[in-house]
Image 1: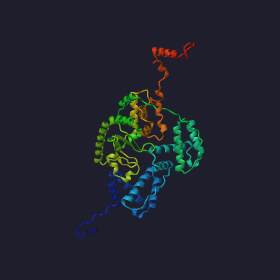
Image 2: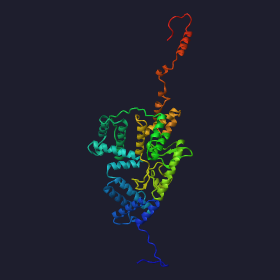
Image 3: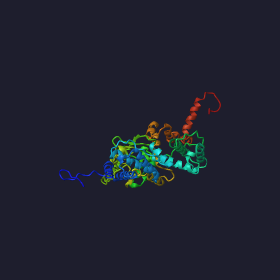
Image 4: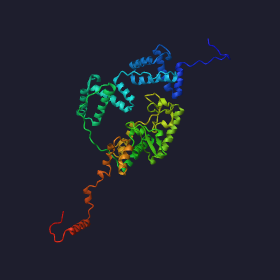
Length: 455
């Protein structure tokens, strides 16, 4: 029987645990998706321990539950991360208990352990997929043997087969070697001796560079996505960005006042600043206005979300809804983030931009092999041709070594290819110039000296 207060009203009952989790998660993340996931894992955690309240459980109980999740889930790595994040939110943000860092067991599968080791070191998703792919290929090459039972001899045999029978490039073989070295040293904790595999020789190739006239015709031929791909292609050539760097530009990275563009977390995890082409500013302003209207519609629907790097989502949970953190070149349709499950706008698929560039190359220059990186090569070469010092070009490109940037001096017109051939100089000789040279030579010969003219 419920008790009433002195004024006859029934006091409000405190919310149940799952309702409290949903309430706190909605106020923190602003979407129903994270709230439902936190409530789901809270329920699973409580049921696993016989409906005991989480206040009565210890971090060790959390570890036993997560071990059970790792053994039974179809996707142990992502499921473990999701469950661990939800339970951390439950104890720290909902219950406010000082339990410290909750334990998180290792996933049982080797490839998942490789992926987790990459994520701990903040490697890019492309590096993570690459290392896991080479580990799987290495295991299959040796008949599904576990790497613990193999060593340097098996690694040398695999790398040698890549070079001798697979005819892979030197960069591909070096990539495989780095992946296997990471597997043994960082994941399995096994130190390897010196490896003397047959290594492919790395050829020194010159980049493909377009002339300014070819670049102009090519950029005019880029089509698709209501002119967005052409704007991105012009930005690639005007700033020297890599394809993925261009796709991942956020709104607050553009500084129209100082005419600068900041590249965040480029290759090697480095930031840099490049110039913002003044000729692109009108188009960028129109695109920003359209992007603002999309963002306002997303916020009205409660689906304004952009994935944040590193731990910013925990430190600033509302930052994912701010306009400055949105991708400048976002997709036309909302999608679900595979890691968090939140619905928002991801950046433009780099593959779609590459297809638009290749299609434009077929129309504008059918006999040239042109891709997104060709615009980066042309950007650097044209700067060198205009007298910009190589050190400045290195900083704009974000190269680690100056030697990498020096290659553009070989294809610049002021370099070795800018020297005129002696065959072309023959046409510049006029008969009167030849006669004047002969007369001058005769004047230098001492009087009374016989014999032929000096040759």
